[in-house]
Picture 1: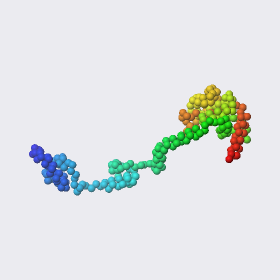
Picture 2 (picture 1 turned 180 degrees about the horizontal axis):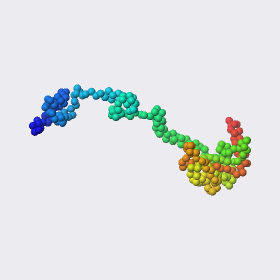
Picture 3 (picture 1 turned 90 degrees about the vertical axis):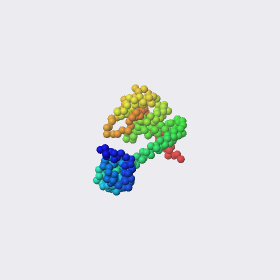
Picture 4 (picture 1 turned 45 degrees about the horizontal axis):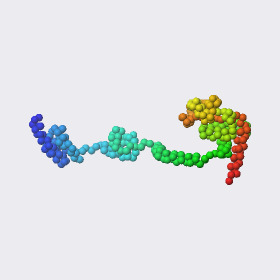
Length: 285
């Protein structure tokens, strides 16, 4: 052992010889035989960093499969599809193509939907700002309402949203129902214009039973300017579990029904005024 160690004492000199032989194209076995170095660990240390000559490399039977797998991956195939095409394991495929871009597994419809969402995320705020500006401009253009204007607005509003008598069912009751606080406010202002006292009005909330009933009653009473005990018993609508409701959340307060007691004369005035509006519209140039 001591003799063998002495032979390898000049490691640097031995390495220089091994490197030179390696660069001449010799294999490890040839270098071993030439330098009489039979210690495999030492032999590998002597040629460390020097690539083996091409003629010593064994052909890899999977080289063609690897190239084909990469080609298929670049065409957009998944691991499963490549495995079915080539018959090799997913682990091998993963190793061969891991540096390539991932395949987009979404359908064209899904890709289009995502692109639209990204576009809307950018354009949505711009459109919303333009919409808000247009609404505010139109709002400012209205200015103050005269009594005649408010009267005509109220008549049209009632004829669109209020109860109406039918030829087959003569009922001249004045009843109005709506869920929009703005619509209710305009209707109440119209009733004030006609000098209909609050005492002649009855109020009733209609709302889904699963909603905040107490909160809705307080909200509508405040809007109408009456105490909650002036409200009639709330009508609760049964919830159908098969129906997907969108009118939920804190902003949902149901509807407010407003009735005018002994309102037949008022109803006839509303009906006649509406017919007058229709005729006037026909004759407008």
